[in-house]
Image (cartoon, rainbow, N blue to C red; front, side, top):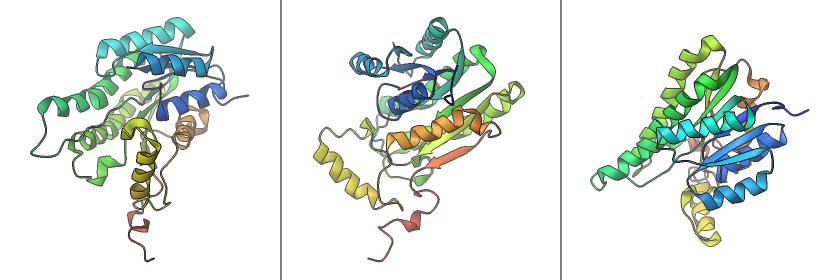
Length: 257
């Protein structure tokens, strides 16, 4: 038996990276999964990889109507909804003194507004006792220069989860947050293996475990929060960052050689 037998999950941004790894794992554990994404080509490729227990829906995470349509598609296809992983997000450089309003607002629209309205669309369809998982980031608290919009958006996600947990506790719906650290995903925008390797060599020195995370490692935590294994965990944030937030001075960059 799988940990998610008989469950139906909606994963936004499920066409690559953390979202796709989570979709694969959820299906392996018995769930039926609806993934969303903007890019039809990557959606089609992901759907082919995931197989018959999946449905791919093209959707814009910044558009509340797209969120409603995605939820409706999930319920129409599989008859119910038990898990929401609000994973879709974008990043952008937004340095103070050099940022256009449109760029800043787009990050907030996708990463905050989109998350809230995805959850709002899903709530009427969720069974009592369901699980909602939001995706934050270590950058919410790291103070990384040039990432004001992204950091603000992920800090907002963490705060949003606590409110949703309060509101949905009477129905036994759990709302928790994953806070990934640097993870090997397409969000870094590296087009070559060499570029990614160079970036990783720099980032790894800031992580106590001296490496980037793998999407599968984030997916494992999402599975835990989606399943009954976490049945008494509510309003919690789990860092999956190799120690970057909890023990930053353990990173190689600070240790004696």
